[in-house]
Every structure is written in C-alpha cells, then in structure tokens.
Length: 262
Length: 363
Image 1: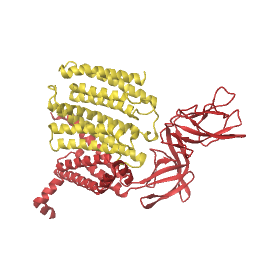
Image 2: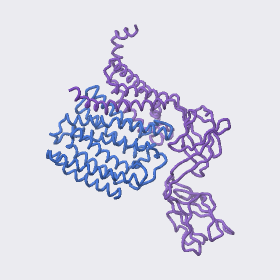
Image 3: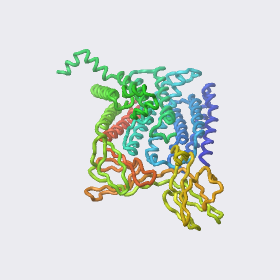
Image 4: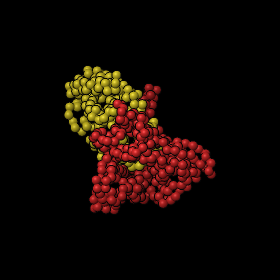
C-alpha cells in the first residue's frame, strides 16, 4: 500500500473517532472510552505505517519539508495523547485533540508532498534526533494547551475538574520540557557541526529559546512560587502559541537558516 | 567578619535575598523573553542602508541609538545575562547550603551556569574567518576581525566536487536534418561537444535562470535567481558555420522556422545538489600530513581549528569557500548540554518512576 493510501486510512479513522469522543465529552458516557482509544490507536498504526513507507522510499526520515513535518507533528500529537491518556485518564479531552489533529492533517495535505532528495545541510543523523524530539515535545505541549483552553474557557466540563485540567497541563509540560531541551540542544550541536556555530540568533533558534523560556517560567512559577489557576493556564497557552509561531510563523515571516522548513 | 557584617546589614540582606530569589529569576526570564522576541523581529547586524530601506531613516536611527540592530551583543543584553548568571548561581549556592534540593535540580542549575559561562567564553575567545581557495592553492592564515590568525599548518584545495542527484538532470535535444529522433545530450557548460552525423560541434556558453533582454544595451540578463524563464546561450561552430543563439526551456519554438542547421530544445530540470565536497590536503613544513574531504556536516578539525564547507564557485566549480573557527566555549557548552539532559531526565523521568517503585517496600 502506498504512503498516501495509508495516511488517508489513518485520516478517516481519526475523523471517525471524533464521533465517539464527541459523545464522550458532551454526553458524559463512560462506555465509549476504550473503543474510542482503540480507534485512535488503529489510526496511529496506519499513520506509523505511512511514515515508515515514506521513510523507506525517500531513504531519509520523513521530516525534511512542511508536509512531512506536519504529518509527523500530527503523529506526535496522537502519540502524546495516547501516552497521557494511559497515565492521566484524559479520554474526555480526546475530542479536542482529534479536532486539532484533523486540522493539522488538512493543513499538511495543502502542501506539496513530492518526495525530494535531502539537501546537503540536512544529511545528518541529527535530523532525526533534533526534529523528532522537538515534535514530540510539541505534541505534549499541544495537550497542555487543550487542557489550558478548557480550563480558561469553561463549557461542559463537569467530568473534568479544574484540578484535573491543571494536573494535565502541568504533567504534559513536564513531559515535554526535557524533549524540547534536547531538541534545542541537539539543534545547537548540529548547527556547530554544519556551520561552525552552535548559536547564531537565527529567528528559529531565537523562537525555540523563547518557547523554552516560557515553559521554564511556567515550571518556576508553579514549583517555586506556587502559582496555579487561571494565571498559570495563561502561561501554558502562551507557551503553545510560541510553539506554533516557532514552527509555522517563523517560516513565513522571517528569513533565516531554517528556510528549507517551508 | 565581612560575611557577618553583611548579614547584619538589613539593606544588604534584602538586596542579597532579592538578587538570589526565584521572583527575580521569573522577572529576568520574562525580560529575556521580551528581548529575544524583539531581537527576532528586528533583523540583526545589517547595514544602515538595509534598515533604512525597510524601516525608514527615523526608525533606523532609533535602532542604532538603542543598539537594537546589535541587540544580542549589546551591553544591556550582556548585563541581563550577567544578572541571570548571578541569580542562578546564587539560587544554586543557597540550595546547596540548605541541602534542600535534589541532585537533578542542582545538576540542571549547575549546567545552566556552565552554559552561560561557555557562551561568554565563546563571545570573548571565538575566532572566525572565511577563506576562498582556488583548486591547487594553499592557505595558511585567515582574517578574523582586524587580526590575521596563522593556522600553524597549510590547507591545500586539491579539488572541489559538486555532486548532484540523478533524475533532475537538464538535457539538450538537437534535431539534426535527416534524422527523425532528436539527439540527447547532458547539460554541460563550456564543453565543446561534437554533434554526430555532422561536422558541427556546440557548447553552452551561458545559463540564465530568469531571462530578460535589455533592448537598449542589447544584452541578456537574469532578473532573479528563480528559474522563471530558464535559457541557455548555445554556440555552434563548424566549417563555415559559427553562430550563437538563445534557447528557452519554456518557449521551444521561439525561433519559429529557422534557417539554422541544428534545431535545439532545452529541457530544464531542478538541479538538486547532493554534496559539496572539497578534497583537501593538510601540509606541515611542506609535507603532507593528512588528506581529507570536507563536506557540509563533516568539518575538518586540526590543531584546534575547525574548517567547514561554506560556499563554492557556482559558475565554474574552480574554488571552494571555507569557514574557519576556533571556539574555546564549545566544549563547555557541550558539557553543559550533557549535564542539563542528565539533570532533567533524572528529576523529571527517573525520580518519579523510582519513587513509585520504592513505595511497596516502604509499606
């Protein structure tokens, strides 16, 4: 089966699983938790296969252009959600996670998906380590963003207590922070190997640092200053907006060393 | 004695407590975030005219007055980093003395101090230069700022090689009178190639990605580097024949019914570079001590200098450009990266896991 077919199947499974997750969130039924999770897991399996096929055909990790990175971001978001659900039991957030995921994939499909050979600057083992750790952290931060949004804009969330949302926000950030740190650090090492400079204040680097600083601030405010509630949820929201700007905004608004990411 | 006096002075104590407080850390982080955002929106270290063109003279003057054009090397920014270093160091020492923090916490904050120290060391001690070397030429020194730095060895460029991916190859098709199928040739610049079945030969003299013709100067030129209108100037020669004509990828029948002997067709294709390889020799006292290939992501390190593939002669492929670096801060920064990852993994991933594992025993 082709990468395109596998990804389409994954897309339809993700889209279909929105229905049980909708019921789970709005109808407050508990019976749908496990089947919904299994559906998403099935989608993830097809998505993983799609990434693997593309990797095999192109001969490099599928992370070298916008289409590939968006597909991987979508994969990382679903993987982060399933891990979080396993430990924190957050199936009621699944509806929003899948909506975000569908939006990411639709955005991915709007990009050129032609497989192109890797340009010399990207021919490094650091590509896999740097990009995958960054996107896994983005997946975790997306979960914290969804929890923060529900925390700040209350709707039907009787089953999701503020304490629970606060814990999800915190634990997702805690999980993602070392990954983002590794992502930024591995990027610095790679930059030193490719260009002889581990830090150039390139816009992408600077915004990665901004994101890292916002989450570092979040952790300091929560752990050392005992902040909580809405104030901290706003910090978590800001952190993810910075993630999105780092990932997409910088590519289109600022020229720099990462211009191949478009 | 001084320490005791210091502690007895309430003002000094308050200053000490503020300087080494988490509150101050949060304030500094917040300022750093704002400064970094500002620095990302204002392109750094450009010329006055470049700023003036984008922002106008008035804003440009403000940028220069407030050092916003060199924000990350300005005294204000260095002061911010200095306060952050002092704050982290103070918090680290306080926690160490109070014995109230875990190994992970201490390692993370120690690594941040190391990171900042490494950054400072780089800012002060890093030397950097760019050299362009012709094939067969040797370089023994480079310029960093106003200084000439001797390498302590000689670097000779034996050969520069530009490898391209197959599949994206440009082609030239030639229809020869009397033949039904056109002849196919690979695109090569400045190489005379015989056309089989004729006494003619041709050579591609010039390539322009975005062809325009200046009627007044009677000259072809490229408006941009984007391949919007790729064209080649083909020179044909033979017995009693000598002419040149522009052949376009997009407008195959541009010349219409031509009286020329050969009919050219140019098939443009995106040329994707696979590797930029500089084959070099390292010489000491005239003797070869090493032979290596320098590529992107594969620099040459020798006697404390790292030499990177930076640029190349895109027209003729006869020279290669290198970045030469010597940075005493890199090792310290790498050590800090190792430490911070150890600290984060220990305190965030391992510690809670080990705690959970221990719980049944304590019961």
